[in-house]
Structure formats: C-alpha cells, structure tokens
Image (cartoon, rainbow, N blue to C red; front, top):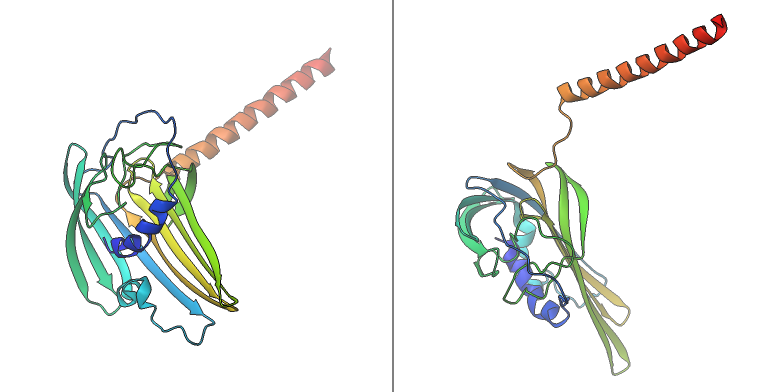
Length: 259
C-alpha cells in the first residue's frame, strides 16, 4: 500500500528502539478477513516549519507529492492460503487520477510485498507480538482500545513507539523526535489507522512533518449498533418493565391501605 512509502522511513529508527516481547506465550496466527472484503482509507499530510532555510516540500521524508496528493486508498482482499493474504489496492489522487497495485502479506511471519504492517493476525491481545518472526517480531501490542471511525466502532490493537535524541554542535542545539501510532482492528487484523510524526528542532526553529491514514468505509469488522427495530424493541421492553414495577407498587400500596 502507499502507507509503505511512509512506513519505510521509520523502520530503521524504530527497530533500534522497538519494544521487546518478554515471556509472551505463542499465539496462533489466523487470517480474519475473507476474499472480497474491502477497506477504504483517507490520507492526510501536514508540513509546518519556522526555519526559513528548510526547503519545501520536505523530500527527505519521502514522496510528498504522493502523500499530500492522495485522497483515498481502497484495499480489497483477493484471496488467501493459510496465513498468507493477497490483496489489491486502488489509489485515488486529488487530481482525479487512479493507480492500481497488488501486494501480499503473511500474518504469521510478516513476509510481505507492498503490504508492510497493513494486516496482522486476527484476535491478538496485549503483549502479543504482531508477527511471529522477522523484523517486526519484537513489536508488541500495548493495549486494546475501542475507537470510533466513520464506518463504525472498532475494538483495536494499538502500538505506540517513539524515538528521540538530541545533540549540540558549535553551541547550536539539535533535537529529533519521531512518533508512530498504529491501530489494527482486533477482529479482522486489518489496519484501521496509522499516524507518523517527525519534529526536527534546529536551535530556535521547529519543523514538523506528519501523515495520517484512517479507515472511512469497509465491508467487514465493525461492532454492530442497535438497528432501528432493535432500538424500538429495547425501548418497549424498558417501558414494559417500568409499567410492571409501577403496577406492583400501586397494588402493594392498595393492599397496605386496605389492611
């Protein structure tokens, strides 16, 4: 997926500071989606700098034209065998053009092509590694949290990692801060949201680069809300319970007064 362009910028740095899984039991890896399932994402990119000597666009952080020019990406599952999942993705750009690509990922080993971190195993939990082997086998889920997206409410597995260092040269202070947040839908393992941020301080100047993608529509994996009929049924049940309670109370009072 196009997120791979962004993800690749952070891999080397975050591998240095990746969370190490300790004492976690082996977790069975399973594919949580079916052939034909699809997921649509919107992408947002932002760049801001107070440094007059910093060029724009910030080419050192990846292809800005692609990231800033992407309106949405639709990922469709084309098939799977065992723990290996294949998909196609359609990228729609703000200028109206589109591009079709293909990829795969193994939700057990993490082996992939154009699909880095796009999908993990279904039903992982806190402290589980996102893959059983490979570069990301030391990345562990921090927490499971419920988040609301335009397509519905999702229970998500969240990873947060930060990387920061600073130094001083010729009395000029430098600081580099990087942050990554990834949320996967727990039921399906599909990526629901990712965000990446780099803050670069050079003396008194700050430059901030950030890109976020977020699921907006899908065919699977949301927690169902009460449909209208069920809501009316629930209201009817509550009203009935209240009415019975009031009737019992009146009957009891009448019996007490009669005695």
